[in-house]
Length: 276
Length: 266
Image 1 (cartoon, one colour):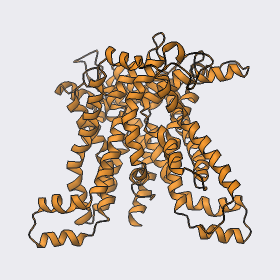
Image 2 (cartoon, one colour; image 1 turned 90 degrees about the vertical axis):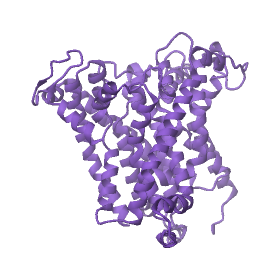
Image 3 (cartoon, helix red, strand yellow; image 1 turned 120 degrees about the horizontal axis):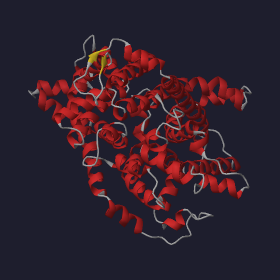
């Protein structure tokens, strides 16, 4: 920085920026705090920010009245499972498009992305009927498959932008030394692209965790992940703010923390390298 | 995805209701005629456009302002960024329910308390302005996304350019209009197009807050198709609606793909 920054200017912008970001964060903070209140305090007027009797009762109640860990486990299996399965298909696909491109590669890439723009409702009914006939409704397997298909274009695109930065000569050298195709991908490409693969994995787990169209429409009770579990709180039932908050906190905490770590890669990943 | 899509096209020409099994009949374009002339469709189309347009306006304008602010020298920028981006990671069902109950509830919500303590009537958000309320919730989720992308773009702006302009006597406003805004134009296009893809198919926020109501006041196309298919079991009619949604999204997609194709060349 060549320009001199006056202390007053620094102080002014610091205060405004902190104020604004706290305002944006406030609903999250308020949810977390309300989860530790009693139901009466949750609707008390005037509301108190920190001065209340902290209690863990809501967490115990949320866990006892519905099987929270089952929904949590469903969310983990569905989001991680669909991402890993997607990577199995996407790594070879992106590899072939980056290192042995043909005339049509660009068109194929654009076509792959175009499937992402298909609104989900356009295929809701056939998928619902197919799943009903195959007995896949309300199963984790079914959701892993659907979310894998839905997010595959994003995974391929993200890997494509990361693979492009790896010099092809290194792969060629491995081939010269007699490495087979599988070995070339697993022992040379994957280790070199590991940071890119890791951030692809992280971002897609976040997207799949928060996905709320297919998870709401294709599950009932057995395979319902946290999105559907929280949706069951949509019908009011007496005093339920504190319990709702406790359940919400448990649903968003893991992904919020993951998100904080991945926010540096977020911009690049979600704009497919258009903004770096 | 091609197989289910062609099934949807096929279903959209059938009289097919899950409550009347074995009565599937060829219906031609009848489903489309019913869907397109249904007053609910016109309402849903208008709501979809209002919702997408409203959220885009708030997030793009707000996002540029936030990004400009965070680009200034401030203490603890790392923490500010983390606080700012957090709403983007909150799952839609959670944010919709939290806003609906703990903030916008006319009796116990925080906004009601604020209004009352300042001597105003509490405002019943979801009864008086359901679509506006949903727009606010969705904008809260997407503003951080826009701001973060704009901030990243701003940080790649050459500061010497700005210094030169400053020496030539350009004020803050003309610097913004002639240097910053053109530099951001690409990021703004990307944000508009990516958000549009996601906003066209907003579903969970409507399902857990208003169920599309009152009447059709907060029903968008996605929700309309869902209610036709899984609540009224009218597969044929819903399929026609799904195809219409696909066509609408494709109009948007053409622009996005053209732009992304350009990025590939660059």
